[in-house]
Image (tube, rainbow, N blue to C red; front, side, top):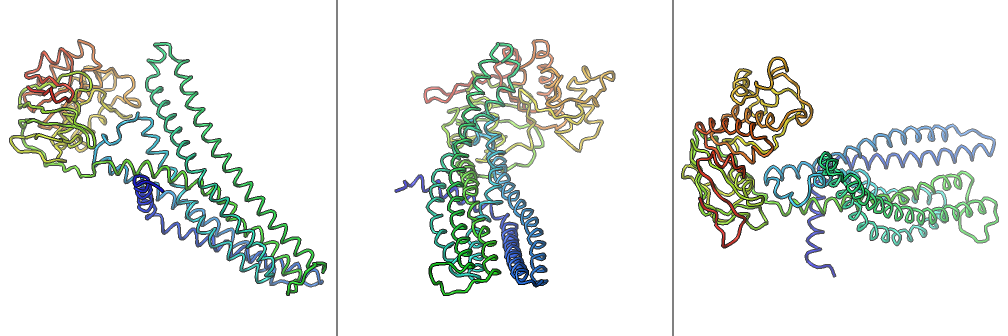
Length: 563
C-alpha cells in the first residue's frame, strides 16, 4: 500500500499537470476531432475501394465508389495536417504554462528555492524538463483518447461488413492491456533515471565550460574529460534502457496485430472461396471482404502507438514531479515592492536571523546599523551570510527572527526595497551591445546626458575614449575583452544613473588588482555622501576604508554577530 508521502507526490504531480494542460485543452480537443475526421476519411477510402473493386470484378465501373475514395483521401490528408498543427500548438501551450509558473514562482520567491544544484543542472531542468511536457499534451493525451475511441469506430465499420471479422479483432484487442501495463510500470522509473542523467551531464558540461581556462591552466583536461565521459555514458545507458522497453513492447503489439490481421485475412479468403468449414450466418461479398481487410490495419494503428505514447507520459510525469516539488516547497508569499524612498535611510538590523525559506537561518541575532553618509562593510569568511544579509533588504532572503528597520519603520516579511536600491555584485552582468546600452539598463528612459555624466563619474571614459569608440564601443557577449575593473566601473555607472538612496555591493573588488581596487574605493567613498552604502566584502583595503565594520559568523547559538 502506498505511503502518504508517495500519495502526496502523485497528487501534487497530477495537480500540476492539470494546471499546465488547461491552456492547451482547446487545441487538444480540436486535434482529436481532426484525427477522428481523418479516420472517417480512411473508412471512406476503404469503402470506396471495396465497392470499386467489387464492381470491377463483375465488369462494371462504380463511379460512386471512386468519388467516395477520392473524397476520403482529400479529407484524410487535410485533417491529418491540421491535426498535427493543432496538437503541436497544444504542446507549446502546456510548455509555456509550466515555464510561466516556474518563472513566476522564481520572481515571487527569489532564486534561493532553486539552490542545491549547479547552474547547468537547473537550466537543464527548467528548459529541458518543461520541454518534455510537450509530448504529454501533443501525443499522450490525444493519443490515448483516440486509442479509446478510434478502434471502436473502425470495429463498427468492419461489423457492418462482416460481424465475425469484427469479433476476431475484438478478442485480440483484449490482450493489449496486459502488455500496456507492463510498459507503463517499466517506463516510469527508467524515464526518471534518464532525465536525472541528462541533468547531471548538462550541469557538468556547463561548469567545465565556464572554468575551461582553469582546467587548462592546471592541466586537468584529461581528468575532466573522463568525468564528462562517465556522465555521458550514464545518459546513453539510460536512453538505451528506455529504447529497449519501447522496442520490446512495440514488437509484442506488432505480433498480436499481425496475427489478428492474418486471422481476418484467412477468414475472408476462405469465406470468399466458399471453403470455410463452419457456418457463420453471413454471406460475404468481395466488396465487403476487401473493405474489412483494408480497415483491419487501421483498427490497430492507434494501439500500436501506445508504447511510444506511454514514454511521452512517463517523461511528462517525471518532469512534472520535479517541477511541482520545487513549486510546492517554494515560499509563494508575494514580494511586496515598497514605494521608492526619497532620501538615504538608516538601516538597522535588530536581533535579525536572515535565511532561506525551508532552511535554518544563515545568521543568528544580527545587530548593526548602516547610516547615511557612511561606508558600512559586512565582513566574514565565505558562507558567513554576507550576501544573505544584503538580499534580505530586497525580500529575497527572509527573517526567521528579529527585525529590519528602515528609518524606524519595520519591514514586514516579504517587503522589498528593490525600487530604492542599486545593487553591484562581484561579477556584473553585461549584455552584447554598446557600453551606453549596458549602462542604460539601470534606467532605460534616461537621457544621453545623464548616461554620459554617470559614465564620467564612474571613470568609464578613462578606458572608453573617442579612439575606442567612447560609450558607443560595442561589447561582445558577457562583456568579453573588459577587465574586472572595467566591468565594475560599468556596474558603478548603473548605480549612479539609477540614483537610488541605498547602494548594496557584494564583493565588488573581488577580481580587481590593487590599483584598480584603490580607484574603485575612492569612487565608493564619493558615493557614500549621497546614499546609504552597505557592502559585503573581506577585502582588507575595503575594511580599512570603511566607517563601520560588522564581523559576521555562520549561524550558531553561541555566536551572535554584533557591531
